[in-house]
Length: 335
Ligand code: P6P
Image (cartoon, rainbow, N blue to C red):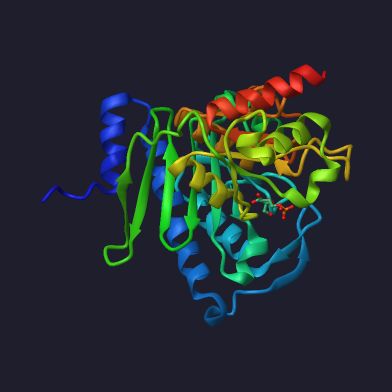
């Protein structure tokens, strides 16, 4: 029987082989994985744990916070403060950055996360997840919000943990994408997929169709052509999925291909999009690229965007390479 490869063994072997994982980063990833196990336990308790429903508070995004949003955020903060691997953290649920308290040693990494993405699905028992992104702190004393404002191409690690029928951690450190399924009997993440690849073509798209009348012309053109099926210019039928949980939609795309879109729309024209660049689009965009897919905002590669602020929003189109390229070309033709 082949021995199961734990997350710890995988990280040690990656550290030994590729040199992409310095010890502090390995500790960071193990701590984040342990925090995700705690979050998974809280999520799985649901009503029995008294964790459903809203927390009667709003986050910096102006969104009503769910109790589990706050629980997940607190778990990640507490787990990552003491290890000496981080200088600071940033979260969808917090307006400013969170410095590691002076009583602990400061590390060389910055951790950003959406502690519980898709939280509108919590109370209806649909898959949700934690998304995280790791940057290196720029040289120099101290740490500020400005240190976080790096393009997604500067990430040194990124991933998510999806809390669904299985709890699965999906991770890249720049050498492809690996998936680890939580073995609850052992209490450890076990390698279940390695060298994940996104098919370059697909017949499945993910978008919130109720916003169609608000999209710009290139996005409407792309979806119209998909809906025309094999009688139309695409010459093939398409299927649609929309889970309203980015982690779940991206996990499906990493598993069987597809294209995910949350484009700019005219409901709030001053906003580039709904999703956040630093802790949603960048980590998901890097995972998709590492698996052979592509990620654009319609005019440029998402990972090339230099952020102007921590909670910057962005238009997102990512997944099967040839579909993302078609979307990019339609937006270019319309400029
Ligand atoms: P809508 C969840 O709130 C989220 O940030 C993403 O996970 C998801 O893809 C999107 O918003 C869903 O948005 O407008 O369809 O509810």
